[in-house]
Image (cartoon, rainbow, N blue to C red; front, side, top):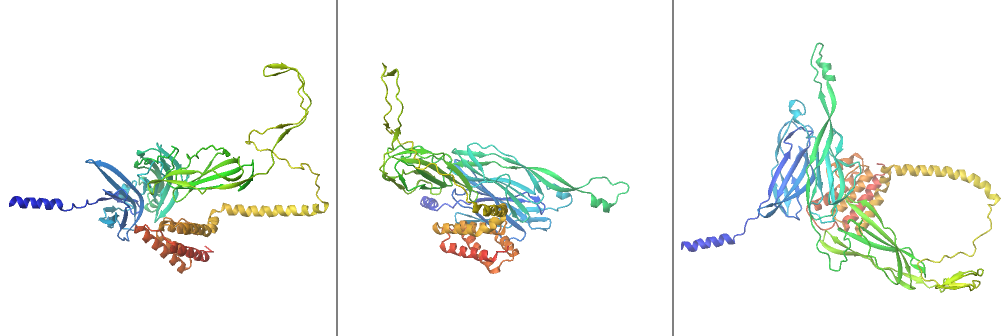
Length: 607
């Protein structure tokens, strides 16, 4: 009987579902002590996270601290023959101005992983006085330096965004950022020598942004990077007290402004670059772009005469690296083809590069009637669907007209030539008569015949005498008018803020027209509105919170109803974004934003 019950208990234990692995969340703050003006970094490390999960952290409301997300990184390690993935979120924590010295605990929070919420406790840290002996321990808390990438597991050839960011207060006076050598990456800077800046409270974040494209699969390393930061500080003179010492005047004149240099290091980054899957068997071995691309074609004429040429243009646009891309070379008996050097242009689109490559080829058809232009297609790898796709354009055709005239080159008459000649190894003294005109046969149409008009020269033209006096009076007026017009145009183009102010609404409406054709996401719609406000207000609004944006708009003395309508619309978009909703914004949201921007534009003419 005991044996029976033992087996039954064992069977029940085996059949019971195993408990789900709990997420191991570790929270830390660095430094553990600093002044109210210091920059604190809150790190949240989550182990055993799914590869494709989207991590969102939320904090309880606090009147003492503000949070700004800085970076996100991941690391994979092999433990007991099992791959363990650890994801780290880094936040900038700023205490409220005037916070008293003492020991504090950051607010609790929660992390949403794969539709499951996990809570964590806020860590403790200490606020020390800004003056006195304790403040001398503040060495590098007033500036932070990190580097991050947008994707730690890209495909070979996939574009990723690299950021090196400096977060500091007003005491930061500049510095020197060490460059680094990257191997197995194609690199192009988005920012120039001047970084992109955004302000959070009393902290300014300087971002240097680059585009990196890995060229090799496997583990790639972005090495450690160093920053020499120049920080302003005030110190009291250590002059000894002697005869005639006055504490009042000595206190006034004993403070000195100095600059100290801090060396900060950003930790190295390790990327796990994935190889592309095998291409289709029909692939001819040419370069495969990675990303998303589109293609369109055009011609400079839809109807030509026989023997004339047409310029055939193939334009390719997308986020994939198009520099190594080449068109397939094909020979045909129905046309001659002459390729020109392709052109490549880039533009910035939300911290990413968009490539535009134009191939131009000259075609000379050797047939008449309807001529179908050659079709081109490009195989590329789409990282969103993780599959190969083919980009192509609708076929084009032109009309080649038969003029009915045979182009001939005629050799004119010449004087007879006599003498001794050798023809095919035999000597002869016969006279060669070249008086009669001879027809030269055209063997190929590679070179187009030159046609001259019937009347080449004309009689000399003279200006009528009655126009001389008006022209002498008109020329100075035109010169003066051109001077003031060019001066006005130069002032307009040199004033970037005024130009952006005037082009804000037309640019936003063009973007909304594109959204009506292709359903946008909530994030794209919010970015369109923030870009319009940045151009209209003359200040960057991308990094402002909803509360900070409200204060900025209220300071401009705009119509309250329009401001409230805009803020409510953005709040609805943000709630849909952070809820993880994957559906698009919808046509109704696009129409609503169009009405809001037009009303805002009418009420902000005098900003």
